[in-house]
Amino acid sequence: MAREERLEARLSADAARSIANAATLEGMSRSSFVVAAAVERADAVLRQHRETVVAWEHAENFLTWLDAPAEVRDGLKELANAPRFDHR
Image (cartoon, rainbow, N blue to C red; front, side, top):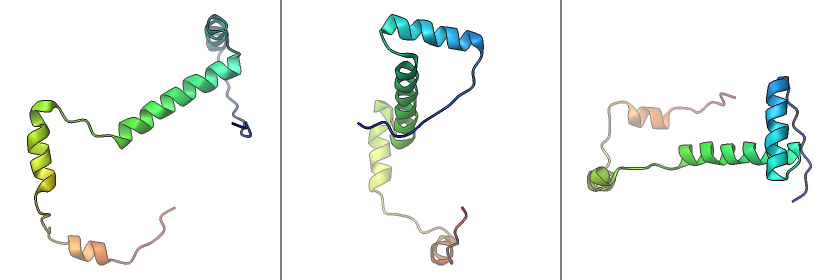
């Protein structure tokens, strides 16, 4: 994979020392170590927001709820048909 993007960060001397020591122990450059750690954390955060984990004892109720017909709530139809706007 081509490395085209660049990321810079300011950190304390203690943090820099910790990263350098850990990278050395792992046989990695500081940059590779930081990127690997950041990507691992980013993947975990994205997975947390993408997946829903339901405890086994609640799974049957959850699946029943998912299979139930949708209920139309007051105002939802109007909201769904309301003009859209770009909020960026």
